[in-house]
Length: 120
Length: 150
Image 1 (spheres, rainbow over the protein chains, first blue to last red):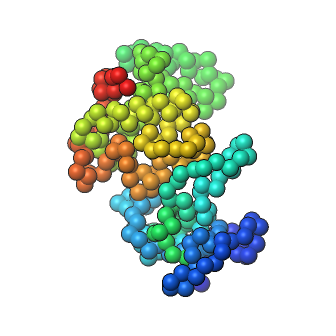
Image 2 (image 1 turned 60 degrees about the horizontal axis):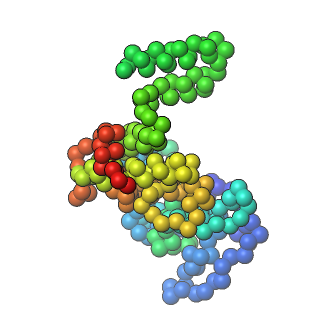
Image 3 (image 1 turned 45 degrees about the horizontal axis):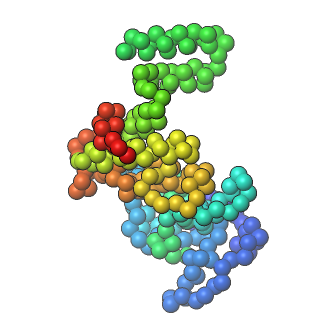
């Protein structure tokens, strides 16, 4: 199994939050709503990102696996402590470990939509 | 104009030259770069105009072939900057603007633009876009002219 490189937490106790109901989907995969920090996902849609210094021409994320950092960036701690409705359309923040052109492994953070990924 | 700017910059730098921190000197230099003749009500517009030109350069994106589109977006960014303290994307609807500005996802350059070069305001267009012009520049006069009566 690939090392995550991110804080290793046992899935069951992350933040004390209960995961969403595990309704079975047609192929038996875990629904994306059950994601938590530390979950692994795979990108299923063609997504090209341009914010990685070593890949200025764009980096294709399709087929790559990543670890979830924040399952929903809309779940944000505001300074007034209250919950506000936010509208981010790529709410899942994940981290990839990508082989750079020089052979070194680079950390790549990206935001993805729920319909662009599948839980592993 | 350049002479006036450099005089102002060096005059401001002198008091800090021996005692000031490097950070405070750098900040003064940045202030001197913004045209000193810009009236107060156009400052945010000028800041967002400058940002747009520089960010288009940095990302290799182009402005719309219709510069009035560019101007309207820049004005919208300036208004949000004045209203909320951050240039929230002017082309979207929000339930809670203050909360969005605090969280930052939609603060220009927004996450979809930063990561995917997707700007649905049509401010920054990739070269393959049908509406991309050839330019990465717009003057303050053009910004004001195209947004008259807004």
